[in-house]
Length: 388
Image (tube, rainbow, N blue to C red; front, side, top):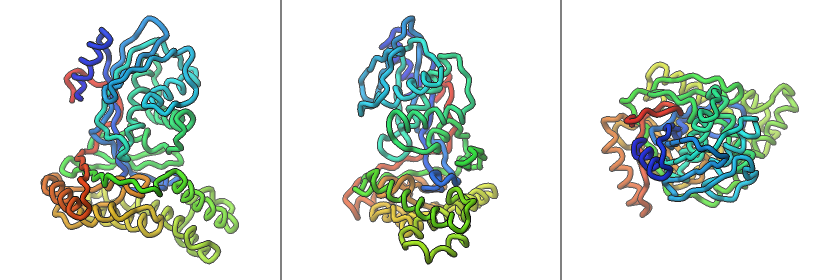
């Protein structure tokens, strides 16, 4: 739904004009499972986004209407819930709860939300909603905060209210995205650099439409526990090591004999992935998309063989993509065990790429993949009427 359409829905529902804001979803180009080791990631904001429209009320009620779910919830801002109920409204509620925890008190308002970030696709629809609510609510409160601080608020909301132990990358990218650029983010310091990703190159996301049972939180937690076990072994030799961010591949290999094979391989993925992110950043700085694509492929192989977080379907999507003209690189993106692949594709070849990959995947699996094309887009902020 367009900003203008969302504004009209809001006007018809609440009888008032509102101010419009937007917050994009994101895709991670490279740097998988490195954020929890205080490492480097390279996401980009997408032109898929959540739109929020807010108008003030004269009481302490917050009415939140979701166009996507065709449902409204009403909240008493003086007595907000403090725990989730497994409902879409947990995400906007979590942000309002966090703002209240931080002493940012809100007067009543009506809020309309609409979005086209696919749910459950690994493109951060939840962070997009949280950031869209946060920027609208903060403007309503007359409170100006730096965008990285807004990202921290949204991460806190998801961690401590919703109960998802997500990292900083998703809300940070939604807040701080730069038009026609990817972001190199240092997850320890939150320093970041915008790297050129011109419009001649598209981000094509292929959704395998499968999520295997290994994708449950237990398996993610097991991977993280393996990494932490590796860090403890490394710390016996180098006490200054705080996280795998501080470890070189040479240091890791010197300790290989003291680690079970699975722990060594999980750590090897994280250590080499951090190095790959920095190499990929240099490739973007020089406009070398061929080199960037080769690094993406290496990252996929490491996710498959070392972190053991790929699957047959995403491997197939990567193989199909690699055969297509104009595809610089492809890899699994997100947590793994299914979900999406991200592909860097020359815009002039994108139509054929989408057709061939979709047809080849359906022929091999019987599954119709959802495929989204996007450019790297700007982060959250207000929208002008008529802006697309």
